[in-house]
Length: 459
Ligand code: 5AD
Ligand code: SF4
Image (cartoon, rainbow, N blue to C red; front, top):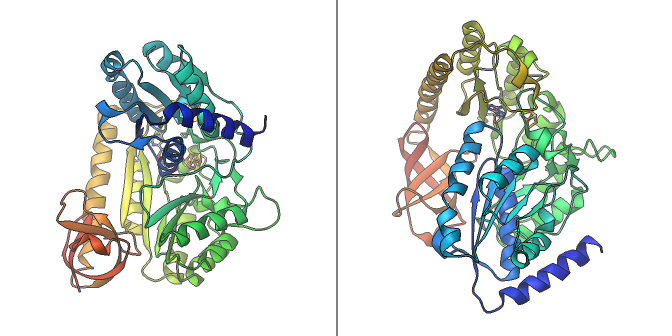
């Protein structure tokens, strides 16, 4: 049976099963934007079957945990939250409980989840998301736990419906997997090798989003800078940016994540030329010491990185730069760490995601001698965060009394009287206004810059 036939067969069977029952679903997502978008696809398939979304766990007929394994903390939360649902299963025996995503791509972890939580009905990985209708059908019709995890990534499957969180700003995956094997990172082990979607499939999807009112898109990939290399016809990420820039209706283009070693001059040119590409880049540094960068297999030096930032700032005036940094990599000395602080000071990031190194089984770094005390790692993280806070605050101060263009994304999460949206430089702005302007571009004068957000008045 072809995949399309399989999808149709099980979709129809599930539609019949769900008919008139007003089934509800709830999806809990951990980790990166890629996972968020995978959850949007799971939601899309469930909606097509006839399920409706609910935020109330007690109401749900299916609860899915889309997991992340990039750090131990994310895994622990999954164990805690799945365990907490034991009583739900007892009070509603028809409830389907599923665990999927990156954590399940690791055989040992999947087995552990099944052993610890025998009440879980469905376990699958990242490579077989498109088989979800069949797996769900099997789960609702069999009395045992349905488990399917594929070792191989397989070909890209197009045409899975997605129910996106926002109509205004959408994620579009342009490539799957990663070839870089940074020594601390589990992603290449669970997401497989780099596979690029065909340019036409991407631009068709974006065209459709634009036709439905979408104004901003974020192109997703573990390393978007190497988009197209596997397609072998010379069409690369800068070409894609130029083509997406031509799509009518789309006003802003963003992308994550960029590996510094693959940030070409042509890409910087494309970013500068394309008026819709926003003045922001997320450029993970990971560490500021050349010794650690080498141990991490990052394949650039601090000097290379600084040159890149200079080039970006010269070519794209006002570009905001954000980053990811890991402290406490095995063997990191105080001197190495001071190099990281020094890079933070030199680059003057707009924002930084900072993490304590978390050993991941099966990665080379997990067997490197460590010797750094946990307390020392925590203290380094705090010093790093304190420095970035000062830098972010000072950077945001420069916005005082400035007028910025904001794409209104929705009602503010913390204050229902306020709206929120982002500047082209990816700063979150809160201001007063009515919900009728959600999805529009407005000018906001900044009146109160804070460390992480800006507050202002619409003009
Ligand atoms: N420990 C801590 N942080 C990690 N990251 C990836 N792997 C690990 C790990 N083992 C961080 C990197 C990456 C971000 C998504 O997560 O900084 O850029
Ligand atoms: Fe992990 Fe490195 Fe690939 Fe990013 S580039 S996903 S950190 S291996």
